[in-house]
Length: 80
Image 1 (cartoon, rainbow, N blue to C red):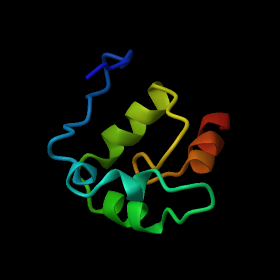
Image 2: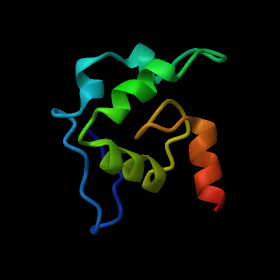
Image 3: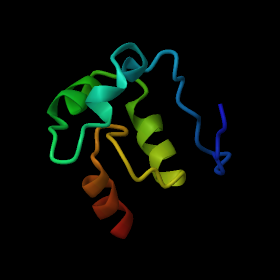
Image 4: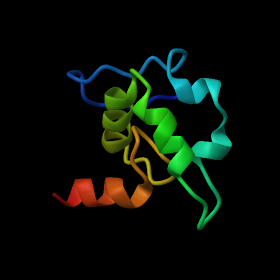
């Protein structure tokens, strides 16, 4: 797996323990206009949520739900 993690102060998510690894990508990468509700529900219960969100922000992930936030929500967070 190629990681572009650049901040040494942030722990990489333990992807094997992350609930998304046990669920399936269709929840986290819905088609345009699809619902992100189920993905966010899974994220809320995941112990790796904070690290996942930090990973997505640091690595500028543009698609899908990461750490419980959609693309638009992460974009708003970046602008702050």
